[in-house]
Length: 101
Image 1 (spheres, rainbow, N blue to C red):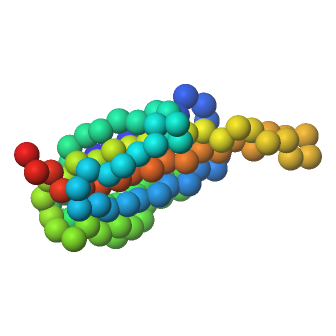
Image 2 (cartoon, one colour; image 1 turned 135 degrees about the horizontal axis):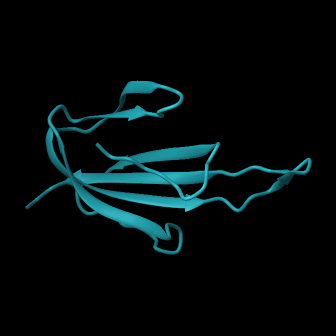
């Protein structure tokens, strides 16, 4: 299980999923908060559960089952005034590549 959270309540966030054949590049300036981890995905499928909004199966399929490295990046948008209200938001990036270890 992979849980992505933020310090603030985020009402609108986007998720980008990528699969690579080797360690994925990342721009540290673009993704100030990153973490790398090892996942065992016995089906090769990545499911998404938005907790309050429900889950979706088969959101992302990797080309093989097994152990995968993942890098999770998070960044928050700068609030933009919209008719007097700030619209919080953020981006999450999850990059997968096969574990060679």
